[in-house]
Structure formats: C-alpha cells, structure tokens
Amino acid sequence: MIILVTGGARSGKSRYAQERAKQTTDSPVYVATARQWDGDFQDRIKHHKQERGPEWTSYEEEKYVSNLALRGRVVVVDCITLWLTNFFIDHKQNIHTALTEFKQEIDKLATQEAIFIVVTNEIGMGVHAETEAGRKFVDLQGWANQYVASIASEVIFMVSGIPVKIKPASV
Image (cartoon, rainbow, N blue to C red):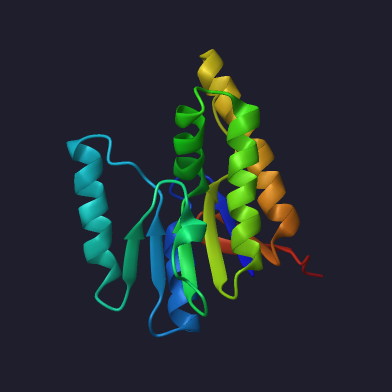
C-alpha cells in the first residue's frame, strides 16, 4: 500500500508522515533517499535522525528502496524529490529513462506487503526554473508525482501543517 503525502516546502509533510507511521506501529522505518552532498546536508541528516528517536529503524538508500527488507513494516520514504534527483543525475538529465527507472521502483514497492508513506514536494506552486536542467526536473517530478498519486491508496495534501485528504476524496 502506498500513501502519498504532498505539499509545499515546510508544509509539515515529513512531520505528518512520521506521526502517521508512529500511530500505525511501534517500530516504524524511515528511508532517507538523499545523497549527502556537503557538510550542511550531513548536519541536516544527523539532526533529523536525532529528532526521530530510537524507535525508528533508518536506512539511507539513494535509488533502490525496493531492495530493502521491508515486508510487514510501516515505512516513511522521504522524499521523492531527492530520490528523483538521484535518477536524474545518474541518467545524465534524461527525464524519460529517469522516470522509467523511478516508476519501476514505485511499482515494486506497490507489490510489497508493507505500508509505504511516501513524501514529495508538490510542483508548480513556486518560481519557474531558470535553467534547462531545472525545467526538465520540474517536468520529471510532476510526472512522477502524478504516477504515484494514481496508484496510491490515499493522497494527503499538506497546507500550512494541516493535512487535507484528496484521495479518496472526502465529501
């Protein structure tokens, strides 16, 4: 099962995903998809690990999340934006091959007996990218988000820390 949590930067997506996981299980799993680019990023990762606490099992996996042994677990995957960046860079900014490989990973997660709470940044709510690579990445992320939302059991949109369920639609 996939639950997609989307929204703008600092909208509370990760916090919501983690709280939801902790409400579902006493032993949640956190999968960080970020590459540790520099010292600042390493410090951020360290800070986030400390915030989560000892009940979490944490993995750092840049691309192949489906290879982790996650059967029966409740897993927060944070986040699609960083995950896609890894495919985008490794495929030399070819959005079609990057999207294909990403979709294969998502499809593998969807067939696993686990609950995946996947966090992503919503695209199209901010400044337009100034570079060709930036515009390609916006396209890539938009298509990836649409794909994950289409197969997700539930989609939550975060607005200023408030979760709004958009799939299944609330009445």
